[in-house]
Image (cartoon, rainbow, N blue to C red; front, side, top):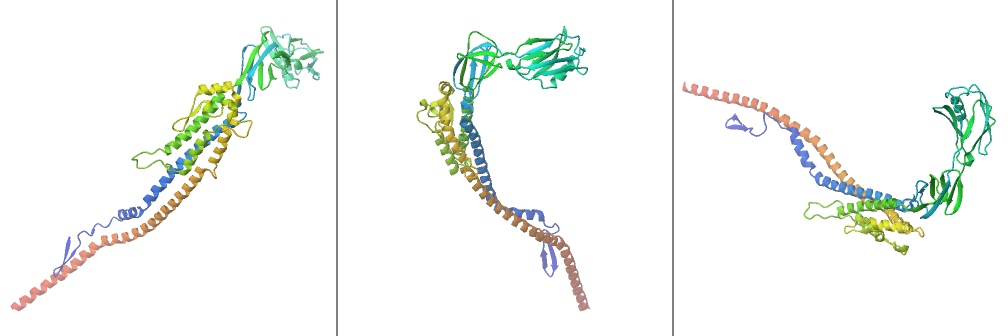
Length: 467
């Protein structure tokens, strides 16, 4: 649009945003976006460091899991020392073995079982039927006899059973009810001859009957006769517990051997944990041609160090040891990608034929080393939270990332300060643009008036001249 000022003068207001003002917010936002542009490469670099830290932390976590699996192979009383015991006749004797039990076979003959002494009384009509008061003497084995007094407070079977159980007599009392009525039952708390019950001096209205005599078991282990007070026998075979179930004139064979299931489980747990680490490392070192970027730790020297040390650890060997001196001799072989694979048949055969050699390879009980001990010591160094290579790597990445974040924050702070000034400045411009049209109209009106007056004066002069 244009405004005529008279005398050939015109103010041109086209394109100045007159009558509509200026969009301050969008203008300031555009300026902010331009000013924030230097943040983009810094933030991209921050993201790179974040990805590197995440990848390193993941591998560190996997190394921790591997360390736990290796510690299981280090334990001299753990899975590698576990044994199992089996009986040729479970109806006569069953067996269980603890870690350290010597492999071998043993013969066990059960001549008699240990019994637990017991008494009961002649039946009464009910458990609450009263009977005559009095007393009786109760003795368990060679213990001190005690006098049990029956009076009006306990002259029923229920009452007497409750009273006896409240005392420390070495027996357990109960009331047994059947078609014949109710009876008091006394059972020794100690099996075998030491728990044999004796009742004497009875002056109550009850009649006591011995239903079982406390007697020791009689067994023969590899030709040696043994008597035990319980049907659970420990010590007859070192680190083996025998549970006597019945008697037999012919011996049962107890076979103690390495627990292949536990050994196999521990070894496979180690292999799985090791492979998880190697797979994670391989992922970081996998180059993809034409890709816009490679894995976060593709060229990381610390990860290369970890990889090489793991390869060195599994290449461990000892001398002798009946030929079980490498992982491969136990059926654990290295694949082309660096992971391990277990031949379960070879491993089980090694465990069954020479369990002590298998344990010695991992723990080398005759020395100060062994595969698991060596591996464990190295993992302790690799996972050290102060000096471990990946931990040091992460610390450096964190510091670099924090430095970038500081730069981004500084840029953003500057942008925020500038934005405040821009808002003030463009608000003033906007105000001017919104008020200027009115001022121009007023000016044009005044100029128009001046222009009109000038025209009128010229007409009057012409008339005068004409007259």
